[in-house]
Image (cartoon, rainbow, N blue to C red; front, side, top):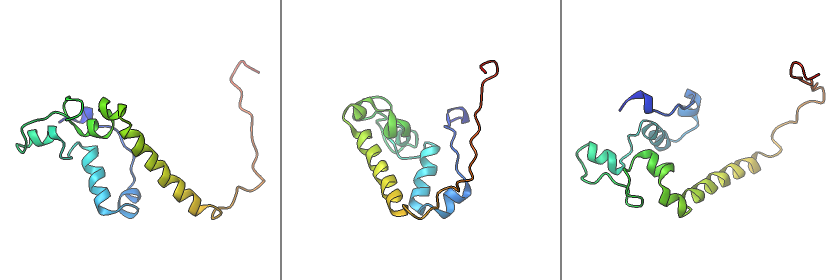
Amino acid sequence: MNWDSAIQRFLTWMDIFWQMAPLRISFLIRSVYDLLPSNGNQVRWGKGDDPTCPLCHGRQTTENVLSSCKVALSQGRYTWRHNRVLQEFASVISTSKGQFKPPSSSFTFHNIYNRGRG
């Protein structure tokens, strides 16, 4: 494993320790560093003998499981998960509706022009 293949993430300590359940924190950290028990990792750890994805028959990694398996994509599996995430957002938005004050009317908008375009 090298750091070049790690995907950049932006998480604050507030995000991690105060707003997430412990099992979600564990999943998040293990998924970022490709430490989930995928078939590929189980072979690497000496706990399995077949590193392939049972759907696409490519090497099964965390990335493959979460977003890259072409068979799962064609079967709509990622769409279902995506829609569940959107449902959670919608639920949070609807329960917090009316709790925030709109910006004051003293907002001033400024036009920004590209140089040479008037």
